[in-house]
Image (tube, rainbow, N blue to C red; front, side, top):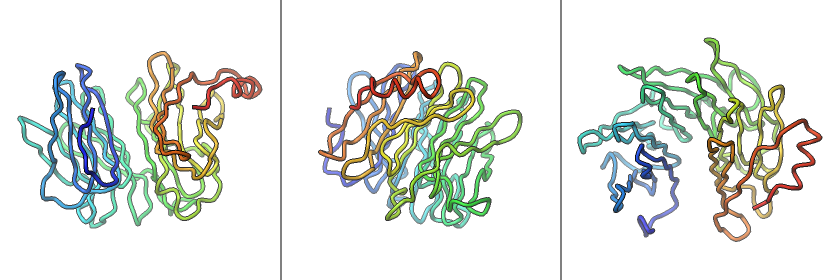
Length: 301
């Protein structure tokens, strides 16, 4: 189905409502919203007249079918909007005099259908986190480039909540893929993998996606100069495998979800021909030797 056409380069976000119908945000210089009501598609602009839109957007829908969107507005900060009674109510979620908050952003809804967002901030080089408590937004800085080596933090941020409602966030700095987790009243941060040095600011294009398996262990699919990679916590340490080796470039524009049976679905752009491909598989089980034995059995595309 063709939803829109004649567009420039843009990012896209997608979710489904309680009826299983899709809702989409996309950013071809303006923020657009499309949804399917079970019979046909509807499209509209969001926050009209606010200015040019770029980078990523995130979308979620409440049980009452109210869509929420977060997005980056150059010159206007990090924005949030919710659709109520046919009208988009938009506001600045974070700006703080900084035009570069929210270039990378990832939103989820908690058990009360309140939004939580992980996002980047420049030039402060911070990973930030905001949650709505039913009355207002509570914001915090989780990691800054001033905290340790590695340069700016928060690029390619991806957020998921565990069964207890605690957030897990995967994100990059210029030297590593990292994860931040909230539990027992405090945040902990880990290095998932040290990465080859980025060239030509390549991290601007890289994405990470985090999901939790039935045991609550995190899985991250992400891009680096080593290719499209999969990292998972096996209960004691991080294990890494290459899903697809790099060819022309290492940018795969990937997105990953995991179903209730721990089957992973990874959609990505093939750098060789520009086609969209889907990789499907279960996370490897067992120790490192068993994992290495399973690598050769997994499909590459």
